[in-house]
Length: 413
Image 1 (cartoon, rainbow, N blue to C red):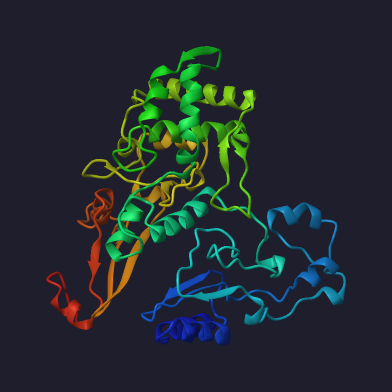
Image 2: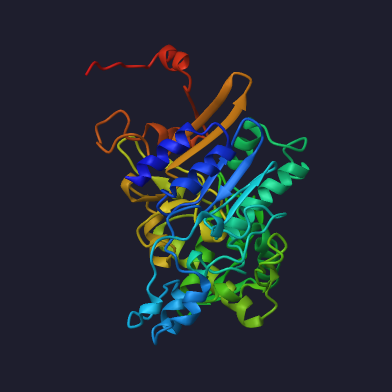
């Protein structure tokens, strides 16, 4: 019931300051982060949620034999045989991460530490998650996109955000892993275009040339994204992915790391062998290496396949969308090349963009999975089609806009 009270408090807040006060008073958010902005230009990030009252001191004073085994998995165990180790209640809001600013806050499924590059958060109970943790490629890309837009260095125009520019940033469908690695991988591959897989020696010239021409994006028309996705899946499958960067990700240099292609001969041979595996697999499936990303990252339906942008988050793709079956595995990647049914999608289910205009909020968005699960429904793939084509719907927000919508249907109850 406190969650309902919390949702009402959020709905009634007229500023991020009021929202923060409501979160701190009710503490009815069950687990998620809250990000918000208001029409005064203030932004908020916080993990003011319902967190068990387990401070760092209690964790350090109450270990068990299981602690060293479970702690790396993010599971905390307290000694249940000692009354002093019993926890009661929840951590107060003052002991939980929160940040208010006037520039930006962001989160891409990383921990609470870096909602803003200029304002790191830390010193909280480990029960909230490990600190001093390097960003994932996707989280790093999310912050890089913001910083580059504020600087005007992303090629999209003058510095700063507008609604259309934010939409353009999202539509770029950038692949951070590709941006950091593809050039060096191609150079090495073309210098020695041979790989071996399952005893077969493979000429890699064509597949490496395809990778060279890739735009380092995962748009539906991106040629070469297929090759890089297969390479990534194969390296993850063989355990070689962890060593691919010369400089691993560093918490203190979130945009500058990871960087560089490993100089290890073993790693480079493993990469060429993985490319051989990709080439042989695609040939067996009858899929050309030059197939555009939308031809293989596609959703199947009664009206035929629909290619979708985005891809796997671990590659450093901001817009995560892929098959939930075999997520992140080589077998899952190969199976998904034949298309994915809408119920099997994982990732960008709902996307929205809200701008404070002169007459109030202006909202656009998509329910990427569409609005119906029935195959014969006209809404089975309606918004998936729009998502595929990079189109967004305008959401009526005011009562007048809702009444004026030509598709409005009113039902008397």
